[in-house]
Image 1 (spheres, rainbow, N blue to C red):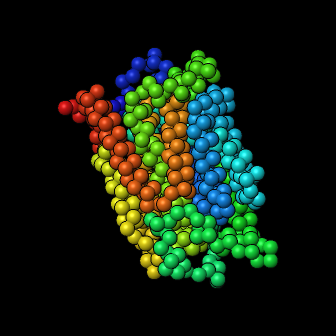
Image 2 (image 1 turned 60 degrees about the horizontal axis):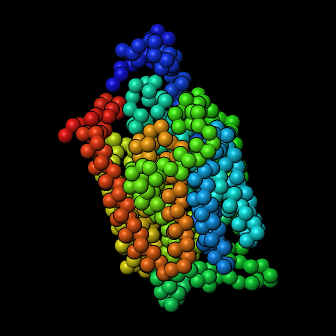
Image 3 (image 1 turned 120 degrees about the vertical axis):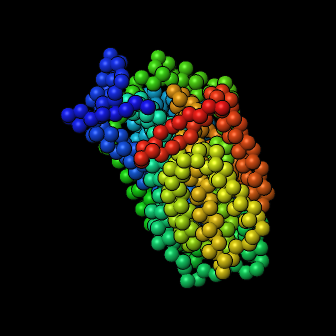
Length: 499
């Protein structure tokens, strides 16, 4: 590892490097201000996504409860992820090639605001077009985010002579720690606006029998729809409450891209124009690179199932769990409080698991997440929720949040590690397969008994973990060593160990 020394100007200068190397010129001018600027960019992206997804994720989590008529709420979510699947094949590379990474983030986030605005008049004619636009924007937006953090981490690691894997993991950990707080801020809003109505009544025994694992989308169970003087209330929520929610979340959605536009440095500052995947390639070549990445890369094939799992588990929790285990037995007004606990756990663990991974490695962390998810599913298959036992729902939310924190941070980071220099097609594939997981979760959960869906989750998680383990084994055989992260005086280093 390259040592660093301070010169008289208090700049960090790597030792033992040839001054004729162009990279050394950058090293010789790398100051503490540059270091702080890197972390500023990570936080700007984190805040931008936090504000945007405080709006989107919370409205999405309420779709199965607020817009149950004809399944419109859940079907629009399915349309979003179906559109993402199509856009993953070509739009990320086209957006990033044409607009560059920063402007791609701004434009794509702005397209999300239309879906939030459509909540003021949630009909097929408003929700469908806005869902399609959001789906088209999602793939290039997430690919741009991943490209920015991975490229900046790789560039800074080379400048400082440190491990890019460690730095990229740290960037993603901090980003997701900030990002996952969407559930805290948004659900404080949701819980406040959707305060329990005095006329809400707990379901009788027959109604409870249709909740939990026995749940199947039946609109008169998901939401009580009554007509009071021409005012239609769904899930016991008045229209003025929906308008207030939509208005608050629309403001949050606008703040996100505004922050990124004014405060994020262009990626060109960190070698955007020199990335080998982009240099000298036409738009068609970039499209083919995205499309062929899966077909020609066995690691991408093996990591595909666990990437789909990332979408499946989020979609199941956000739609099926909230409808079957919260809205159905204990009322929609409890969603906000339970999701706050879930999101808080997710945010804290997104940071902590990055720290833990550096000490015990990836495999134990992934195994821990799989055990958490599997345990929750198997318990819920045999448990019927009631108002008296709603405290258990908070425990399940904590466990699911711990698992999700691993999948969201470490799968992203793992892509950056095993596909260096191929960020755009690799992360396009990530969004493709994760989106397929979301799509499957919404379509399956909206059409079959939940217990059947939960057994599908058990099977898929098992297959996904096997695929991940195979990648780790192949890497071990290919390199003849594996990385163990050690902490030496507060300084993290990657140490290679041979057979």
